[in-house]
Image (cartoon, rainbow, N blue to C red; front, side, top):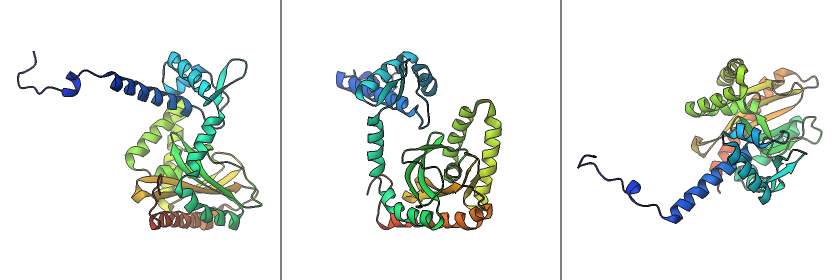
Length: 281
């Protein structure tokens, strides 16, 4: 018997009405559906329900039901002889519409393009997404020799200059969460991946920017810098890079790194000046 003076729990004692139960079910379904979509990475081969279940932690039967529904809605498409799935065009259109609406892209674009033109390199702006960085904006010089990446592209957080700069700028709790996720993804290589990552983060602490000489793609040299928005509540990151083709590494330390930090500061200043936040103007 509960004690006489134990306060009743109105939420527990009140019968749930059908509308409340229905809304709760819809929220759970939406959350799970988004988890399925997030299981796909930009350079993935098609995934079957088993692979999706492994990545999301959802039951295979739940995944089968959600993937079928998402395919019917146009957010997934079935490919190959085994009925595997890939992201549908509807996801691409939805994501690009959202990214195009971000005010930071309009503020950052002229500064990024000027840097890209000056050094004939690519310049990208990204934000963390799990263990990866997602490109929000991308610029390149007219004669830039590098990978031609696009808005929405995903690159690994732990092995890119952009990702390391972003990780360094996070608060301690969020950084620990990201590193834990990176370790889980690395499997038996977790210790070596974390050791290398912490060495790189210490270097960012020393100079304020990150460099990558072939860490992600052997032929790509890049420098990365964090971008703070919304009084530090929102963290983004910039990178600047190109195919190495005999490039002098000292340029990344002595020229590109400091200039990227200047662009980062100017983006933050202009966002504050126009009173814009990351999501809203």
